[in-house]
Amino acid sequence: RHFVLSLLLGEMGKGIEGLNEFEGRKYFQKIVYFAQQESFGLDMGFGFSLHPHGPYSKELSECAKIMLAQKEQCETFAQKHKFNLTATKGIAQLKTFAGTTVGGLSGLAFLEAAATLHFLWSSPFKHLPTAQRKVAAITSCHELKPHFQSHACHAVFAELEKWKLIAA
Image (cartoon, rainbow, N blue to C red; front, side, top):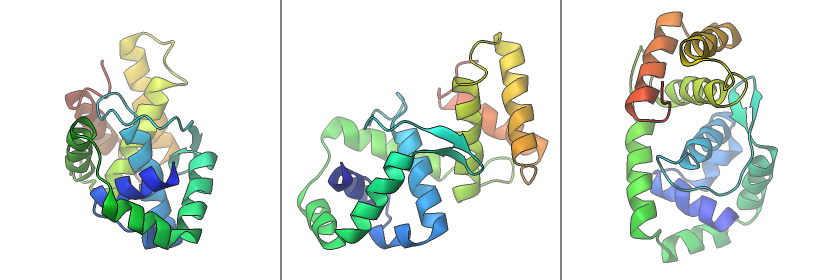
């Protein structure tokens, strides 16, 4: 899977060397988290749990270490291979989504807020009725991440609805 992940990073305009930095690893986690959602169609089977910086996969973290250790082989693979047309469309949409600016959040801050809200919506609060579920997800996101103002969490939630990542 690490070869396919290196291909995904390349398609997103990022290099494997970015995985040496905390911000690069956090971006990688959020991109793979969203890539696996039905809207983008690249399920690679990684499981995620909620951590301080949003959804996190230990298995994906281990893949990142392998990618760094086998950087040359991964880069060669990415240069020689392409995703199929369906995956390419999903990646193009993912790239557009990742470039969203809403509620004063963009880039990695947007991805962190969006992934956290999506995870909260999809996992711990999925048993609640829709209206309560929305309030619980937004409130919890703001409580877990006070650096994201409440209005920003609301705006990101609305963006997730727009992208049909959340059906409220």
